[in-house]
Length: 70
Image (cartoon, rainbow, N blue to C red):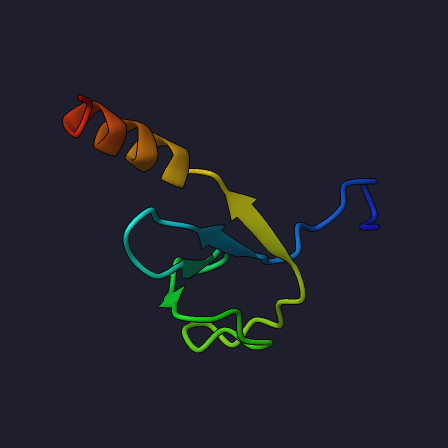
């Protein structure tokens, strides 16, 4: 904890899963895109140990279902 009681946010990988393509991992510190969650971000050299899941693929699945609905 810092002097004023607020915790400094640690960078994490934001995992974006897509319906018809490979997952992508985005660094929360610098926004760098990666194909897998590295221990050190190749963009900003931040040490990252956690991955947060982003369920955006649900929207893509709903769009595909709407497009191909019988």
